Length: 287
Image (cartoon, rainbow, N blue to C red; front, side, top):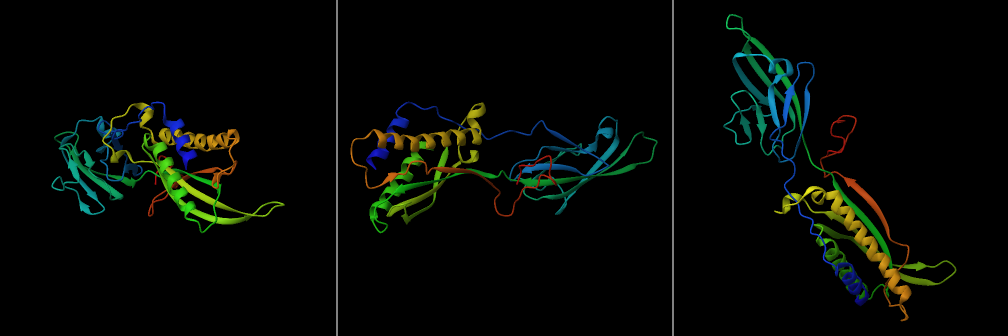
């Protein structure tokens, strides 16, 4: 544990840049136009506001309309501004607030092109989907030479290692989670048995919404911060090997076994959500 604390000090002794975050992109200026040929697909992040969805086609948008009236319907029936989750403008523009109900949304527009002409009626369909970002994280496994499997030293070491790794990536707004820590008896090649801890943990970036921080450009990006956290952890384990090689002292009872650190990138949706690039080519990485 003393060796681990020394390595943590070496990795954090220099001042580090704080990676700050904002609330993410806004859709205030984005406008979605409908079509009479096919339903237009719109993707809205779960519990966020939709872009402005127009009750118009590109053709109608360029015409002068006389006495237009607009009526929106959704999966739950008629949409009205009396509902706090719906914002409707006099020109029929729809904004869905805190969106969470996927389905078919239809707008009916009644209008005249001239005062003398009869009214025309047009229905425009939208397929509006609520999506969430996938849960991206790195999953690491590492093996340590261990004390006897029933020893409390192994438990204490695992807790200390987890705390150090957590502190190592905290400035990047990332978190370390222990998946499992198991002690096994391993028969060595042409050798006897030895005790080993199989240590599995994940490293994930924290959600932007959980922090009221301000950030700039790529420093906000979750994958950018997560990638830097990955490099810090790889460096931490590499330095454990270097310290062991340079030390003239006997090996401690518990130490990292060189070359056992492995990592996989995990890209999963939350329960109830899934990815399908064939059905949703405009949002292939959306859950």
